[in-house]
Structures are given as C-alpha cells and as structure tokens.
Length: 522
Image (cartoon, rainbow, N blue to C red; front, side):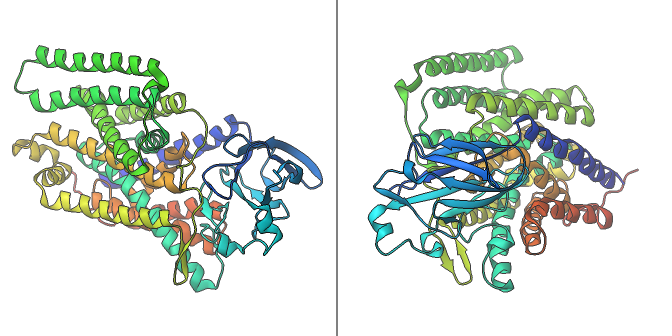
C-alpha cells in the first residue's frame, strides 16, 4: 500500500508541477521562435556574418534577421505553423553559394515550427566555383543538418528522431528509431540513477535533479569554450565546498564540533574570496580544455554540488525530523533557485558544443548515425556497467544497497548511514552532470534542458522501481525506446505522452515497478 501511494502521489505531483511549468515558461519567453546558423564550407563550427534571413508565412514577411559573427541568427514568430525561410542571395559573399539539400532549395527552406520548438536550421555554404561546376552533392552525401522533429536536437540529415524524417521501408525506419530510442534511453538512465538511489536511501524526491543535469551541461560548455573569470571563480567556489564537505565526512567524529565548523567555514570563506578575485580578473587567466576534459570537470563539480546539498541542506533537515512532504517542497524551491542561478551565471542563450553541430553520418547497414551518437552509446554503456559493478562488488556499493533496503537496520548493524547518504548524493550529482553532458551533445544547451528531461526521469524510476539503481537503468531504456518508436505511427509531439502512458499502466498493474518489490506495512 505504501509503495502504491508513494508512486501515484509522485506521478500526480510531477504532472501537475512540470507540465504547466513548461507552458508558462514558453509564454514568458514571448511566443515561438526560430533560430539557426549559416556555416562556412571550410569550417563547419563557425559561420558567416552579415547574411540576411527573411521569414515568410504565406505571402507575408513575418520577421527578418542578420547573422552575427558566428553565423547565428534568431527571429521571434507570432505562433506555431508553417513558415518559409529565405536567404538573401545578394547578402552572401561572392565567393560562396548555398549548398542545396532536401530541405534547402535555391536558398529557401520550408519549415514547420511546433509549440516550444527549439530546433536550429543549419544552412551550409560551399565555394561558388563548386556550385557552378559539378553541382551540390546530394543530401545523403553532404550530411548537412536539418531541424529535428524531436523538439530540440540538431540532427544530421537522415538522423531525425521522427519517423517521417527517416527514409526507407518500415524495417529500416524501425531500426533507425530503435537505435535513437536506445541512445535517448541510455541518457535518461544515466541521469535517473542518482534520482532513484537518493529516494532509496532517504525516501525523498529530489525535484532539483533536473537542474543538476543542466548544471553539468553548462559547466562542460563553459570549460570547452574557454574558461576565464566565470570558470575560474566557479572552480574556486566548488573546490572550497569540496574541502568543507570532505572535512565534515572524515573528521566529524574525530575533532570537536567548534573546530570542525571553524575549518569548514574558513575553507568556504577562502573560496568566496578567491572566486571574487578570479572573477574580477576576467580574461587575464583564461584557458580551454577539450570536451572530454570539460566533461570530467563537470562530473566532479556535479558530485561536489550533490554532496554539498546533502551536507548543508538535507542532513540538517533530516536531523530536525522534517516531514518528507516538507522536504519535497524544499526541493522544488531549491530547483527554482538553482535554475535561476544557472540563468544568471550562464545566460539565456542557447549554444552547442563546438565540433558536434554537423557531422557526416556513418552507415551501419540500415542505420545511419553521426559519430557523436556512437560516443554517447559507448560511454553510456561503460558507465552503466561500472555503476552496476560498483553497487554489486564494492564495499561502499553494498552499503548503499543495504541502506536503500532498510535504513534503520543498516544503522543498527554499524553502517555509517550519514556517510553512505553523502556518497549517494555525490554519485547522483556526478551521474546527473554526466547525463547533462551526453544530453548536450545532441541537444541545444540552455538553462531549462534538464527541467524538460525531469518528467522522463521520474517516469523511468517509477517504471523500473523506486529506490533501485537497476530499475532506473531498465526504466530509462524502456522510456527512451517507447518515446522514439511511437513516432513511427504518431506525431513526434506525443513522444512523452506515450512514455508517461507506459508509466501509468505500470502503476495500475505493478505499482512497485519492474524490479521493485512489494512492501508490507504494519
């Protein structure tokens, strides 16, 4: 009974809070929009400045924009619908010409903008002599990007997540979407493991988990594009927070409370001073790391963020016997705070990781994938296997599973439950940050990306079984596959609806989830 009540209550509260929240955000941003980039032929990661873009609906011009130094442009639209995007041929430098694709013909593109759509429109230029000679290559050869029907993914041609954008017969489309669903599910699974483990060890629903995903994506973007004032200040703050958390974890029972608090707050104060100095220095101390290095930094900072939240927010609340429903409300407030801090620090702009915007496809039989999707798949599988081995064979992993099964019995058996909970939050924060990095490889990186993924993470942990990491893995894969394969028969806008319908069916017929177990109360 308790498991059924908790899962149903979680589903209802999540639906009430998340779904209206997304609609409200779209309204606050002032209607729909369309954006994109015009890229150089010799460097696909950079664009051409000064090209005029006009957007028409029917015969009326709705908006116009001019590309910036990076080739990016953006216009606001009055409503969702079908639009015609026209590139002003006279504004294109004489040495360039527009590459013809299935989407772009004679400098014009017909696009359909859905509500809340964040798809970029990528138009590539080629040398003018190449266009006048043998002509533009076919879309399958060029690998140029088109808007994805998935709502937010920049995809190379032929890798769109919607069924109508996948060419070939039903079998080929099923295979292509199945692989895309597997990749999507792996990202959800990695992001949701921490959410499930946190519930298992504390019985608390962390509504801020989606914003921890965003944090990871933003940090990786920051350090991969060049960390200066903001990046250095962020490192100083989190290094100080890591020192303070480590002091509490390892010295709490060995030194007096006054000495411990003095050491912790001294570390935090030094971190604030260092962050202020480094922030004021700005670009004087600038450096840049490749994306894999930025991902490592993001995972470490995400782990520190999770551990810091546990040590200085959730543990004091638990020790004061604050009710779970009150802690859930606190997590909602913390999510809003974290989201808007990310907005203030990183801005409202939408960006992508350099080098991963447009990639030539790799053909694997009936399946065509860009290299980044293969990286996401391989790395996700390795991480999931590593987490499973850690939980199954290591001492701390067994302690995590023991605390998740029975917290009181574990504590009476001599397990330091507070320290194990701290490790769980650190692991959950690191995995959430890694999920954000992987999600950002194929998604526009912006301050609400994790919030949009949160509902699917909740669906994954409920489907797999609340409190079990293995359940989150299985549930994430199931949610991703159902969401993507549903576009074979239904519009892509219903992707999330079918995934949530699967969750509802699971609550009706097996409320403990696929890998959960029934609990007897009383």
